[in-house]
Amino acid sequence: RTAEAVVSPRIAALSPVLLGPPPRDLGPTRPVRRLHLNEGPFPPAPAVITAMRAAAADLHRYPDNDGTDLVAALAARTGVAAERIVLGAGSNELLYGAADVAIEPGDVGLSPAPGFGSYARAVAMRGGRSVGVPVRDDGAVDVVATLAAVTPATRLVFVATPNNPTGGLISAADLDRLVAGLPNHLLLVVDEAYHEFARAAGGPDVIAALARRRGPWIVTRTFSKAYGLAGARIGWGIASSAEIADAFRKVRTTFSVSTVALAGARAALDETAHMERLVASTTAERERLAGALAPHGFRAMPSAANFVMLTTPSPADRLAAALRDENIFVVPMPWRETAGALRVTIGTPEDDDALIAALTAIATDR
Ligand code: PMP
Image (tube, rainbow, N blue to C red; front, top):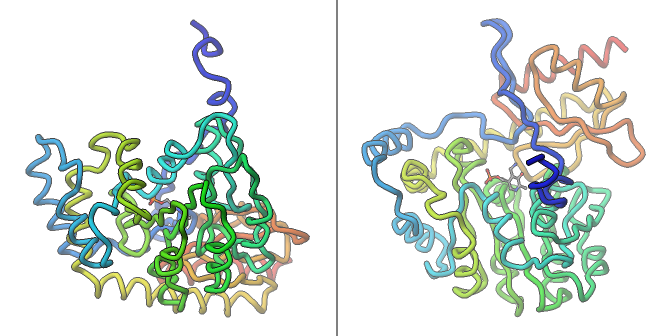
């Protein structure tokens, strides 16, 4: 049978995920600078790696599908009842799960534009219609525009704070506006993948604000960023009720979170100092990078994440290509009435020095 005969039109219409092979060092003098995926720049704490190695001895067994120990630790840490906490293979599994939970064919899902690609993809995969709500000029999710975009067909609303790729936080006042203005018939997803960085930047308490919402919600978080476990694939969520958490548990792929990921995440929760060092280094580096590039015509959008969006003095896609020749990887994108923008993950001081040197050289050459 031909592919046309078996691939449903809505899957055929999706654009492929083209991440390509991971970029590699080009010899000792040209190490790869992975500033394109918003990962943590440092390996996990030694105790985390030890715990993951020890867990490998049980790999002939299936994992604990409920992640009992980890969920108990997250419940203790957050003060939220364990039955309201759900796990996923990265927070991505929960974002897709939100569409499974809320979307019937024809329903509408709202998400920020630009925004993380999984929101629109998840809605489209379930036969829903995805509608993008432009973010504000400062890069924060536009809560007023989001509320205005809601119709009776809207069943799912994604917001992110900070938003990827723009970096902006939703203010406390806007969170309250969202909670007060959003109808109860739809599921609200607040993506806090960068929660630990946002907290360091003085961001508002999202869970406390959402506690005032009468309708259903989930906040998603991850071990991929501040905990440096992107390769382990483990995320989690806090749902408004045990019933909503149960719905997410129903749609999960059974055993999607591996034994090794569970052990790593559990150990990482005890390595708070390691996580806080990563967050502090990232925060300081973010400000240093923005300050060093400003004189060369790169304008940093306000960011409370481990990345920053820089509008560029010349076409962003050409700058990204020139950086790629130096083995430095960043993400170019259009941005309003500018030459474009680069989304740059904050790296190690050496990574950031390499980026500053390369962009400064390119800008001075012009
Ligand atoms: N949400 C946002 C806003 C992100 O930027 C990312 C990762 N780039 C994710 C979710 C997914 O991360 P993970 O699946 O690794 O938890």
